[in-house]
Image 1 (tube, rainbow, N blue to C red):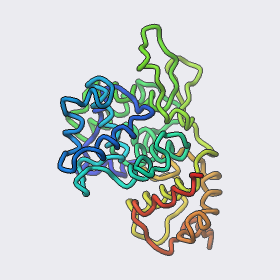
Image 2: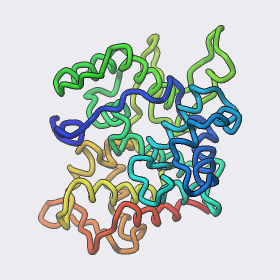
Image 3: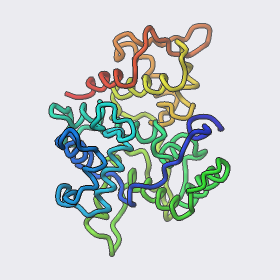
Length: 311
């Protein structure tokens, strides 16, 4: 499947930056607040590199770098874009701003939205590739790493060293799987990522074996799903219709990123007209199963749909 952002000539892989630490509770809020509360002329980069950053965040130097990495990878900050001069973003403000809807990362919708930012977009190469390109439900660390290294050779990614890829795969697994602590594990090592609660990846019987969990996702709200449809459509096509096949199987599609089977996906699409305020309509005319849209929204406008999932 040689489609999607990973196969564009302009794509640059992102296989490091987390310092081996998976995303933790509280980190995105800390990062957003640190940038938002800094003097207006202060760049986001300098907030994390300042002499007092370790004291400000209450963690070591490597973990400060990891917090910064995850804030940018999830789109809560955007140091590259910096459209407002402060690197804070609409999604960061929606979740963690002064009137944020989930500042403590307590609601399932937040985890689903953050997962979409990581795996639906291509900011995190391993995350995007694993959910959108990996050809099997079952995998182990070595299989994921080998597949990524093969992709790197095919695409000519010069900085994809085996050790880097293996560390990224290990971080990917710890992002989604609750790992039993080892005898030498520190308190920080056994803290779980909030995305483990999504149940998207589970261990299997054999040692170091895992599987992607396909099927219905009851905790995935219609608001985040509708937002994801809008985001995907805006990147995939300018047409006014979108086929069930594309929504289910294209790289970066909601079907792949949320691991939805076609039956549960189709059931959601049938009810999408209500959750989108009439923006989308499901059609099965002449045997064609597809979405039709009556208007167009940007990805930032689509965040309004997310509000439906919060009390």
